Each structure stands twice: as C-alpha cells, then as structure tokens.
Image (tube, rainbow, N blue to C red; front, side):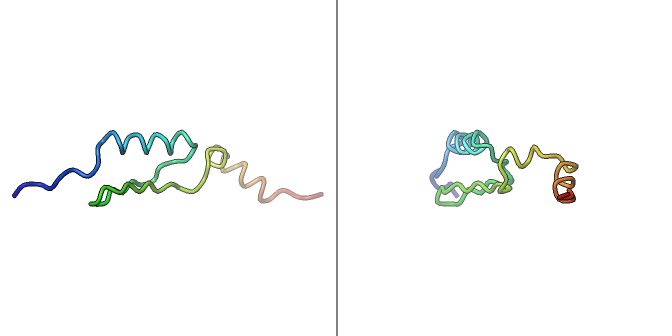
Length: 66
C-alpha cells in the first residue's frame, strides 16, 4: 500500500523550531498533523524567566518588605 503525499518537509519543521528558540522560548513538544499543520508547544516562559535560579525565585517570594 503506497504512502500518501508528504504534507510537510523537515526543513519546514526545523525552521519553525529555530524561530521559536530564537524568540527565547523553550520547545517542549512538536506536533505534526496529517494535513501538514505544525504545532509547537512551549513552556510559556521566556528566556529571562528560565534563567532565574530556584534560589532567586525563593528569595523574591520570601523577601521581607521592611
């Protein structure tokens, strides 16, 4: 049984992922639908938020306002 026509190219997927990374977002998952639609799921945080260490986040949350 022959395969159907290819609906996306590796180049299209690579370009899309690289664009998301260049925008400063981390790629969590990539979905490619049968119709060729490419969906890139990110963690919703930008680069500055990810660069914050756990200690920095804890200190900001527990800082006293004195």
